[in-house]
Length: 271
Image (tube, helix red, strand yellow):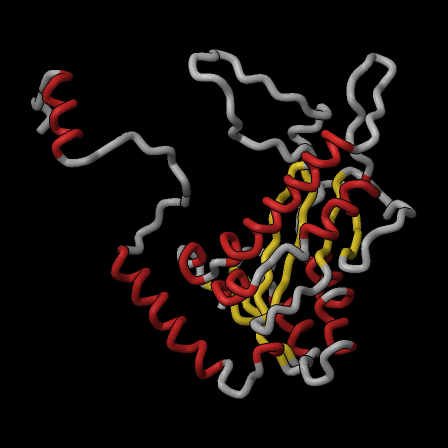
């Protein structure tokens, strides 16, 4: 096989004949020794365990959560321009690399818990007015840690019982990242009569469609809110004439309505 050679024309015809094309890579994962058959069996066993786990639970007792990074400047990767233009310019506030973390959680009945926002680079929570459906906190790195998972379990997930009296006996699904599978965290949820079901590695892409059904619409709505603010909001500039970035209060205000743009089919696709 090492001695095989061919012309560019042969490769072109081979690609066309077999309906192949150049594709952008959509998912990157670390190589392991599991075969597709083994992963399929793991996923099948996991799915078989869910009806047993949720047999005595109502829809408002079954939850799924996930966290996602969100860019401060919510620029779209595509736009419409005239054919033949070599350059497509776009404006922003100079914070295209700055991010914060959003933690979202929904139940099978369609209830969205408060979205926890973790702003980066702050030592203290700013004294600002935030929407009622947002819980705001801060850290140096702006990412989820065991301490923030404990905070979320107490201040967000633990407060659901105020609205649903029987929801304390719940099941919570989340992926098996290093933060989620700490023994101490399992004990935190156990003390609150909540069973924590971790979605096994290499299977989250097809066992937890939260990215597509909830996080996707959340970011789409947030981008629309940001674009509306950028186009129609109050325009303030620095001494050098550049557009000022959004403040923390504005970011949290944009996130508030974005958490309400879910439809019934979004919740249904999660469970």
